[in-house]
Image (tube, rainbow, N blue to C red; front, side):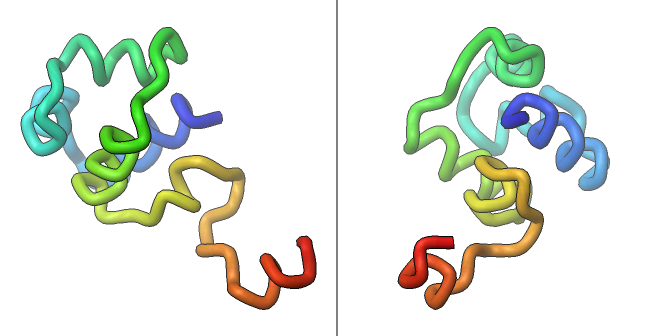
Length: 77
């Protein structure tokens, strides 16, 4: 799921792997490994990916496209 999200959002933003890697501060090969599900990013790298892709961590890490609302967390949804 995470690997597919990175690829999908990168395509939406019309970014190459090289451009995304430069924004995040990682290698192009690392982005490729993330997209293929061969590597997992650290939390710090995930935050940088979200920032570079101009999206929330919720969108990258879950199957939701909208951020989790505070009342959903409190009610355990």
